[in-house]
Length: 568
Image 1 (cartoon, rainbow, N blue to C red):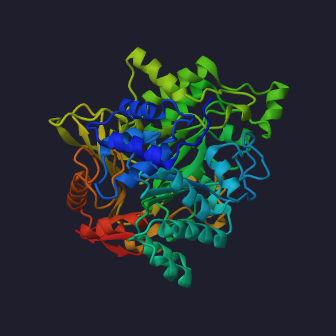
Image 2: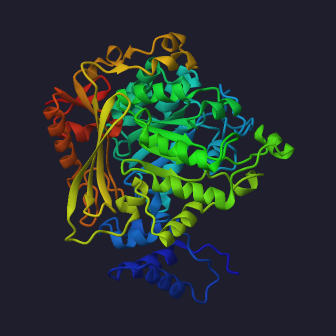
């Protein structure tokens, strides 16, 4: 078998032939490679090698979208309009003792070293700077534009880590983004000199690689008003919570250490401050049944105390290092798998409303790490096929986003839809630009209208004593006015999220056939302002990512505290 690495000259010749063609297809690139490699001992070039040759040849002539599309590996990575960059925190004691969590000493709680992001973090000694830089380089080496970074921080209970470590970790992530590329290289000296998180964030507002969203994951019982202020200081815009189940009996049996009341309070606090709120839901836990799992999942959207923006479904599996493995060996726990799992997941997908996104229906534990439960890695594809055969449809955002659907015809009618629902002591409006059939979503906005005259964060009084919140004063009195800690939100409606789908287009660029930068976001913002004003709000605040503050400034918004705000 040929193993020799093709010389640079040969790869340049291959790409020169490709560039001479119009409307390039993957088959044309394959034919060019075969032609130039015929009779040699060279292996086929890697995609990253072809991309390097392509970029060298197009420095002067300009980029070709048809070729870039063919060279791009795993289109889904950036087809949601952003480049997701996942980084892991160092191992640190977790306050939870959940029976299903892996207990690997060299990893943060709930992670195993063979998961892709975890393996990368371990190799890089959990250095956030190196993780960001390496992942961006990897994406770009495979043909993706990674200049709009959605930073996702994993590692268990973020809020339990020391505050100094959390500040350092996020600053290192921003520093990495600021130092990438050439346009912002002059910022490096200034950032090194001052070395503060605020300086790094300020520099990122105009950097070539911008962090446009920041996600952390934590436990519901660790969400307090004081923690919310700290999250905003770091630039966090989205919070993933390990809700797992909304049944206190199941939570107690699995030693979760928190309650349904904690989830209710955390959701209310986070929504009041404008965060996007995502849940982790675990079907198949000890003490549950497929029918009860489906009922709980449906309640997430029928009960106004919950209504998450996104749900990651992680069917419960047995990891050898977890306490649950002992239950499994003893025969006291049987994992949910096979047809029972499939039918439960299908019922859940059918129940998802238009405003929610299901990014995962299975945790990406490698099969060799699972000693009990489903090891089907393409579970989503299996479910999709089953649903199509039965004429069933999932309305979740991931299934409808433009990047995952066939492109709309040039004459397709794009309409504005508004879905309104009550949630967490406020009214939520989901504004979206979609085709008439609502099968393809181009852009959406989440608008929150807090209950007035003030946003009072409270839970059902009878639930107060059930809270396991570490801030005991909050446990005693749940009537907390978030405006005392975030006065910039007074008299304001809040834009919690604005997102345009489709292949990532860098700030300032335009592509004729792309969804991004076509004015959909601006129209949604205008509509949000109109609605907020008509409903009696004096201002509109946006929980903006650091890297998109410039976008909102161009629309007349100014920085107030950690939010972009405009008087209506």
